[in-house]
Image (cartoon, rainbow, N blue to C red):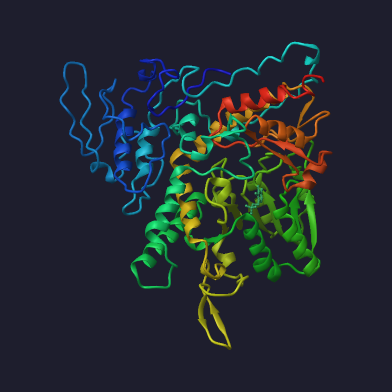
Length: 594
Ligand SMILES: *Cc1c(COP(=O)(O)O)cnc(C)c1O
């Protein structure tokens, strides 16, 4: 692997990680780029001015750092800050006020069109505007400083047990993710070690070892920003929404609806009327099966799913099929775990009412060709539901580009609380769906004879919803968007390549799921080892992975296994986490030939 050109936000570099002087060298070819530290400072000032709100760190120096002393290059001067006079050929740094001028989004410097539209809500810091500026700062990070380059797979240990099976070559498709190493376009700013510090739970020991969380496909950890947002909600805003004419009701309604807008933006839906809050992906799929399915799927109709589906995207359709007399059909996968499109197409026909497919498999990590499959289904007049539970934390999602009719995800898989998730439904589809639960909130008028329902989304949100956790979901979305989903995708792709190489060096290890299009998941089995024993052994090393059937038994059986060990990634994982995993596996008795 070539030396990565990574992007680094100026952090308070630990002396060990960054020798003095090194990090100040701006990369060649970026003259005139905004000065990172200057902008970071402004971001800090801005964040620290918001009571009760923490800044995502992303490597940004903590608020306690003194104002910047000097910048090596002149750099970008934010609007509202008078440019200081030049002294000789040294451009002094302008004094940046603690707060104020940046309350509005700074204009992008010429030639750097802002990637994000100014969607700042009144009273909120323009995090994205600031990070936009930061995103233009590119620094060359030498290997060993900041982001580690993916090193070659570790040498197998000497001894009689080193004859490993012929390595399975796995070529992952880098074209699926934005190139972090590219220099031509603006990319996000990323330092996994820095973001990890935003997650308090990751800073602990388990069985006397530092916790390494590689169970992200089951649930993700929550950044301080989300935890503090929940606290702020309960300390200052808690009220039922929509119903009362008092200050707290207005606050909680605003916060809840702001979260809906953030969710809309996150999925790139056209309107907040297309976003229904639910408990999670499971409840979302059940809502669609009940409200849409029972009205639109009839005897003899067909519902198509794929072999990759999570039980949550199988069982509700089986139940619906049994109830109405419809048929469930299953698109097969090849030996790498990718859907065979020709076989899928053969399943589509005039009886197909719905295709329900996952965008990323939770058991194998396969990224399915969801947009292509959606277009194929539409050609046959079927609607499409995309299960995004596994996709949302790994890649940018755009429901308009996918053109799916429904999209569901769970907040807890994308750094938000449990018990909250969302259904996207195209407006034209939701409008014609009856409610699936009755109660308060979803009605326009009730008499004992007749009830008039609210339009979507309220029609599908009967009763008091999970207001606080919806607000927490909004905070989680702000958090990942500030890093940038494209940046996250690119970073995780590097981790996936590195982890794949490392795992393949373990004697007797077989990866389950070797599609070129993969995200976030490294499922495997090891000859002669029970998966639960491997899980236990790793737990003893402080490494949390899942071993089991991952709520996706059909796809594992397709590969001849009942369970796998499944390390799964998030952006806060590092090369060191994967090194620890591989080193621990190396010490398993089977790997040592015992
Ligand atoms: C986790 C998951 C689900 C179910 O999500 P819940 O949060 O349990 O409702 C569905 N599909 C996929 C692909 C998942 O990973």
